[in-house]
Image 1 (cartoon, rainbow, N blue to C red):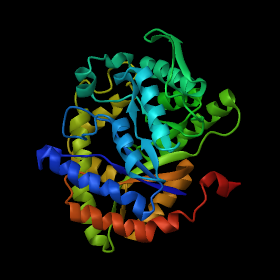
Image 2 (image 1 turned 120 degrees about the horizontal axis):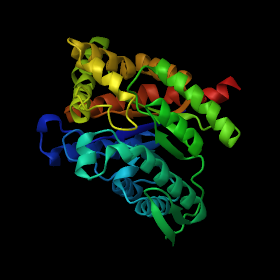
Image 3 (image 1 turned 135 degrees about the vertical axis):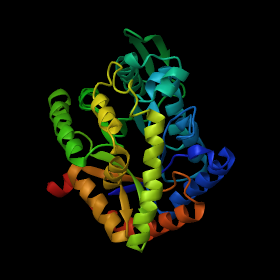
Length: 362
């Protein structure tokens, strides 16, 4: 099993300067390759303190130059906020800079603040995502882009530098709603799971995704990549305390950023799935329950507990790659560094001994 690490640059309630956050998290990023991680990732978000990596491809270009072997993953590029021909060009550049180490992840976004900031109608997001993804995926294989869709009118232009190897087998998309999983199957790309709902429900939807994938593309889909907010400590009581404070703290930033309990949430076209979530979160006494629910999805505890949780996730969702987030919600640098180092020393070597769930079944 492969193991990755993500950096998300959170500054909840502006506890530090943005400069301090970047200094802390870039130090985390510089640790991943020397510690033996297989991949480094970041996420795209804009306009508030939730996460502060507005250009994940720029971030990956930085690490393409600072590393030699580690894979470079986008978790994710939110396609409706971009000119897709520029995305195709940037991805090709990073792949050249890194000698083919790019892992390409797409998504369509969820936050009203970001859609409003980019002047894009959220109700158009699903259709735009499909058109943009289709053109980029095909363009990276052919070396040129062209498309005639409802929203995207792209005359034929070459991608320069020309992609030098296929992105098949290393292109993924984040999918949370059942409808999104079906779209990814038809696009022929893998699934990147950023945990927000019960693993049982994720596994059920992945079953439908795999069935559609086989019908449309033939053969088996890629094993999934699973992410998780991670805290590792030898003392179980301290691990629990830190998980509640910081993983729970992260979840509260997500609730604020996405306005999950607001009246509008889930009402835009293509986001109907989220309306039930919003109603549940608006119920009296839901805050503490939702934090406990989120903690149950993530990876925290002693090294043995962290290993067992990731192994459970691996088996549930057919994952062959786990990506941990180690610094978040204003966690002090010393605590993030200690957790990351312990995880790398005692958990990661055992994870790397595991086969992907698919290979194990075979």
